[in-house]
Amino acid sequence: MVRRRKLKRKKAKTFQKKILTGLLLFCFVLFLFYLCFSNYKLFLARKQLQDEYQQTYQIYKDLYQKNQELQKLFYQASQKEHLERILREKGLFKKKGEEVMVIIEE
Image (cartoon, rainbow, N blue to C red; front, top):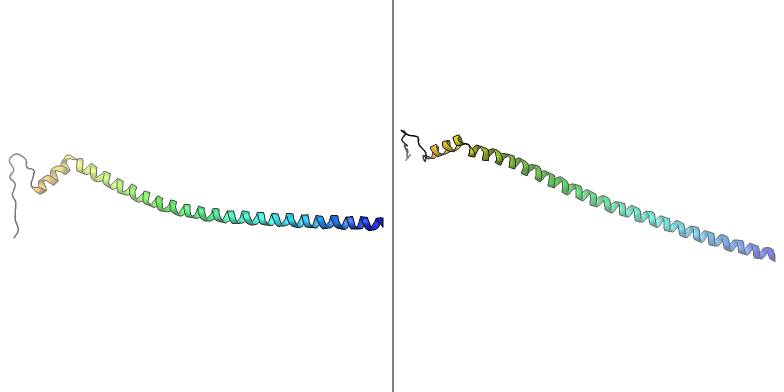
């Protein structure tokens, strides 16, 4: 009789251990699944940010190049010789002793 009680207690303890082990294993697998899912979401967000960065960097490069061209044009336009040449072409500027002739083509 005593043996039967000990045997029942051992069976009950092993059954509890099995349930506890199964429950812990289930929680561990669930936690791993959560980590994998979170990692995937972060991967997608990172990829989207990288794409946005590439687009923004390309826009920056284009604007920088355009800025360089405009600075070059501004420098040329601010030079006295350039202004004089433009005004001469339009007939708005002449030196002493020069006459401006306008040729009209028909």
